[in-house]
Every structure is written in C-alpha cells, then in structure tokens.
Length: 333
Image 1: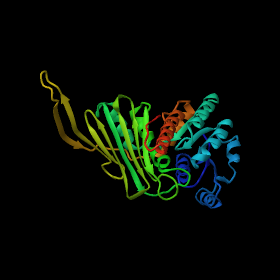
Image 2: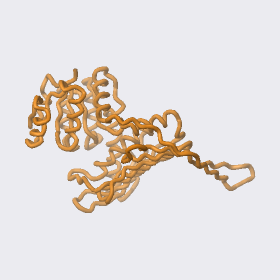
Image 3: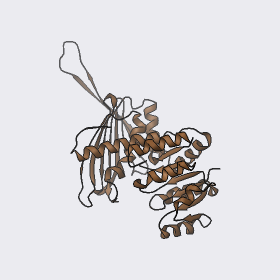
Image 4: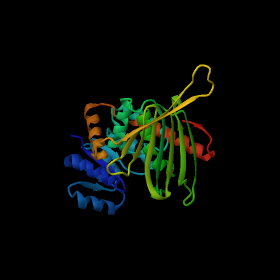
C-alpha cells in the first residue's frame, strides 16, 4: 500500500486529501500546511491523520511513500527535489515548475532514483477529454485543424503569477495530450490592470502540419465561460464544460476545396450534416487520476502525464511569458 503525505491544504489540497481518503483511508499518512486554521480543518474532517506545519516531517518520514505537492508554483521545485532525494514518488500540482530548467532537473533526479512523477493535469481524466481523445484516435474528427478555447471568469486573482500561468496550464495540458506533438512557436498578448500581473491574455500555439491552438484566458470577465472548439477535416465539435448533460456536441460540418483541370478558381463545397452529443462519463476526474498514479507507482509504468508532459507545458508557458513581454513577438517553444 502506498502511503501519502500531502503538503498544502489551501484551495486544491482538500480535494487531493478527500480523494486519497476515499480510495483508502489508510493511505493518508499526514498533511502539512503553514496555516494552523487549515490544519484545524484537517483534524476536524480526518481526526486520525497526523498534521504538521513542518514539511520536513513528511519529506523524511520513512513510512511515507509518496508526496503530493499542492502549493504555489514558486515552492514546487524545492519541495519536489527534497521529496525525490528522500525516495518519495511525486504527485505535483500544475504547473509542474516555475522554469523548464527546474523541470528537467526533477525529471533527471526521478529517473536516477527510479521514482514516478505525475503532474496533476486533472482535465486529462475528465469524461469529456477522454471522449475527445477517443474521437481523435478512431479518426472520427479526421486530421486536426485547430483547438480554440475560452477559459474566463471574474477572479480568482493570483498574486504570484499572471493569468497565463494560472489558467492556461489546463488547456496546454489538454492540447499536449490531444495533439501529441511538440509546439513549434508561441505568440502571447495581454495586459494587467489591477495587481501588476497580466489578468487578460491571448495565446496562440503553432504545431507541425498547420495545427494551431488559440487560448483566451481572463480574470476580468463578467461571466464564467469554459468553451472549446475543435475542428477536424471530417467533423468538428464544441465542448462546453459548464453544460451538465450535453458537454460535447459533434457536428458533421466541414469544407472541401477541389480544383478541376482548366479551372483556375477553387471549387468550394460545404457540408452541413447532423449534430449529436455522445455520452460522457461522469466519474470524478481526480479520483481516476490518483488511482492511475497508484497503478503507475506499483507497476513501474510511466504515466502519460509524467514529468515530460509537465515540462512541455512549462516550456509553452515560458515562451508565452517571453512573447508577452515583447508585445506578441513569436517565440520558439
């Protein structure tokens, strides 16, 4: 049995703890947080779990097999490195690290010590993304053309990172998973209005074979929107993550251009067929992800959302940050 120590019980930590406890209460060994108030919440919900404000207790405890790091990104590298140095498997919140160099160092350390790294790209385990991946794998959509996402809401404002580092990792991990190719270049534009960090931003990622992704992230929207369009040669889809019943709608629509001998103008034909909504599994994504993490630790299998996956996302974020500072200049990813 894998025993967990969880570092961080702020916004996302309670969900990690709840799901570990739900899989098997005996796996939850200890929880660390700097806030005594947060630790009081832990003791109220899980009275038998050890709590502490000292992360070193968890990192050096020989009875703990895995560490879940659920803290701000600027703390990730030090905590993750110490966990790996002490022989702990690592489950770490997105984004993986603050720099690509840090990610590379952690990956090398994990490989040297034969340890598993899983980056918490929770959306990859949602029923919607799993269904979209299925539609790509069985060629229902055909050759991919684009991924266009709007992820906006009013807040929550972060004080250590901009809106790209806060919201874009969700879509970047999905894009990385669905497209399956490394980005060639990134363009980002945006502006900050309230706390010195960009709170509205637009990011365009260029992939091989003319596949393009565009992300709109915003902390200043009057409404919450979670809508993604994915276009393929055969079919196109709309994914509205706020929909309860019909999260994905597949449209049999498209365009075909042909040339005939002796005719110089392209012949354009439009296809407008039926729309249908496939069934999407409603199982909690984080529970599936943690169960998969346990399977990978116990079997030695490399997870698809491993350190390399996290590294690719961080590289795209770094490129976006650089482009943002240069007012939208294209930057190699």
